[in-house]
Length: 308
Image (cartoon, rainbow, N blue to C red; front, side, top):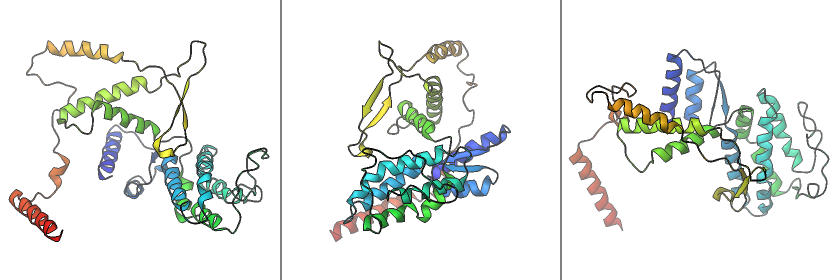
């Protein structure tokens, strides 16, 4: 995450150089990032991406469900994560107190109590439960499972995170862009500075052209969907929209620019590339003498062999 913080610093420096002010920023919950934003951007509103908070809660519920008499907790994973997304989306002004009040209401909801929650959110927003919804496996108040769930819902961590959930924007788009970067610049391959720079530019161009692709349709005009089974859902499925095939119209422009640059003198610098290559990040570290490092490595290895 140290490199993530360095990237954040550089991005904000670029914005400041171009006289752009950051009013709102959305990140995950990493403590180092939180501290840096708090100390360096006091006038910026900092929100948390809902997916990261929901992921942490789901992990805790799954772990608690493995305890004795708590197996029924796992059945509430999807309902609680959905409720968390609703808490953020239904509070577009980002009022933290209202979001916390809505989140606390689920403490009563899991016991089949839907009124009398609190002043800011006294009654559940759903309609009267009927059919399978009414027959849901409600937790029995006072049971071990109920106490475990209550501890997770009302924990100190949740009280800090829920009021800072991002109501409008999430980090899913930047995650998608990172996936595009991995396509153009695989992590298992090492590139030169300028090679990596060019691949990042290519990834950005490709992403910008295809980020807003429309949903694909059948011959009859019906919207297309697909069902997938992500590993993290442990057997549960996800329904996703099928988008149209990606476009590569930008390649024609790149080919034209390449032909233009080919006619230029080979010794002339390319204007679009940085003229100064920055030092590698590891250059700031203390570098030991190679012979000493190798000697220490061999001595540690020998000690391991002896202890076995």
